[in-house]
Length: 176
Length: 196
Image (cartoon, rainbow over all chains, first blue to last red):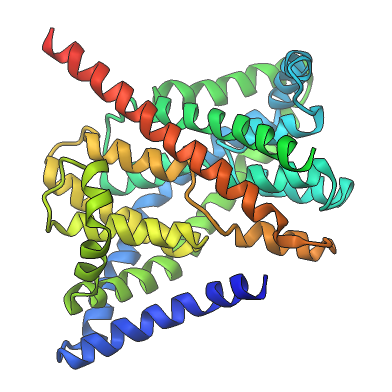
């Protein structure tokens, strides 16, 4: 445990140290180069803004209307039949769509069922082993102006589905 | 497809609210979420500026080239279309390394730089094969050490906050490998269609 937290804490500062040492040794104007690269970051953040506003608003409408909850209730019986714990279903459905909502749900499940319960462990594993597909596609394609995504969304969502199934199977095998 | 999904989420929400009597909530969510999205974008500035700055220094110092050399054998197989010493390789690798260690904040700017370089290679506004493979890897999550989740578990007094690292690693490997297989399947399907 302490080893993992130490690695995580040391990694970034050490990476920066190596970069700066090498750059200084090679007589690269470090500060000027940093500022030059940083300027791109400002432009990028602003060009991303409309993409994020569009996507986040659409998701918020779906959630606030109650349609998302209704949909979850609708398919719940089918999923329970194949052995999916009902408490985890909302998280599984929201995970690819909204990162903040998913993190909120995971926290909620851990708080209500306890971190060391089956549900708590399953939520933790699911949160860590999948990512917010819609956000990643929005940000990465939006930032470089890709208009035709081709089969990217299909691949992303199918991978999420398999990741979620894998989490359920593995957590059941290890802790169940 | 993303046009359809985007419009449908909003349309379904609005129509549902008509019958469900939640129009009030939709109205509120509309403006609040737009506000949140702007805050999020502005919040991204600090991360983007810092990491793109550091990465620019890393690039000119040649640190990215070391990374490429270290992982070249694996990455060449996953991204056959990217030339050996192209800068895209360096950014792809830094993104993957940052993701593996759960440093999501550092991973995004590098991922965007990788996409930029891949666009230089393809030269169109249509997603290239390598871009889709790269996103497939990213969306399936590469996090081996889910730091955020561990932090939440600690907060709620878990007896063993890190016990989920093992299951997370296995689930991540399963989802990443399946993402790559699905990606290959759709790629070859699209090649076959184009040849007909």
